[in-house]
Length: 198
Image (cartoon, helix red, strand yellow):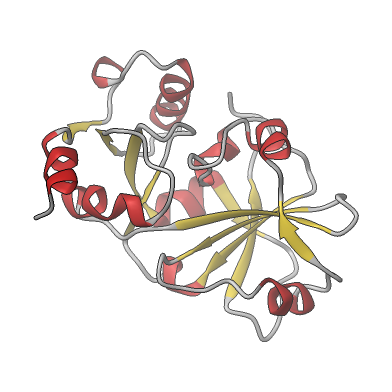
């Protein structure tokens, strides 16, 4: 094991989901409190800041969960937003995805746009950002491989903690399927059940 990986692993500590086990970060506390109120069980782990899905490999091994890459995108007019969830090894062909969902073009949203809509910063985006109030024009696209896994790791809107949550709880309690699905695409579209949770 490399030195930096060993140091990171030494800083990892799994705790069961409860407010007593949380760090002092208000954002993290709000997310975990909301999950508790929604009766969504979770395990939380605290770690040094991470910024990419590759940085989370050891964390996911410790949590014994599948990884999840989160991409926050916008269409060419900035009128619609997309949160893509896919496996870390999957490549996102934005041109192909745009054509499949009827958009002329998709591009990565800016840090300012992410802060305004997802209430977080690059490196901490996850499906749990939906616990906050978001625009009604936010579309959630989840890759079929993610839907086939039992659990995923996701940040509570901060990149110094990760949660292990079942995919079933997320898709049944936090989300609901969009009324219209895109054909010939590996992603399934969801939307929030409730506009505001926090």
